[in-house]
Length: 75
Image 1: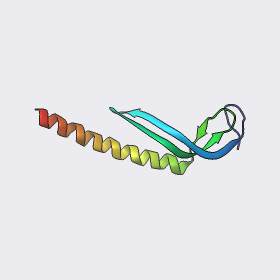
Image 2 (image 1 turned 120 degrees about the vertical axis):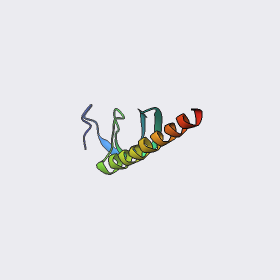
Image 3 (image 1 turned 90 degrees about the horizontal axis):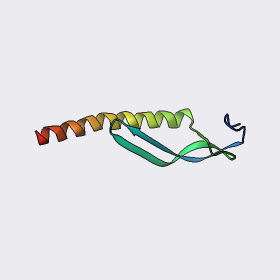
C-alpha cells in the first residue's frame, strides 16, 4: 500500500485518534491503522471507522442526557 500524501510505504501499526465534538473531547492512543513509514500519515480501515462512529454516536446521546440532567439540577 502506498501513502497518497508522500508515496511512502504503509504498514500495519496503531495511531492516535482525537476529536473535539459537541462540547466534549475524545482521544484514543492506539487505534489499529495503516501508517506511512515515511510521513506518519495514518489511514483507518472501515472496521475501525465504523467502531469510532458507533462510539461517538453513544457519546453524543449520553452527552445530551448528561447536560440535560445538569441543567435540570441547577434550575
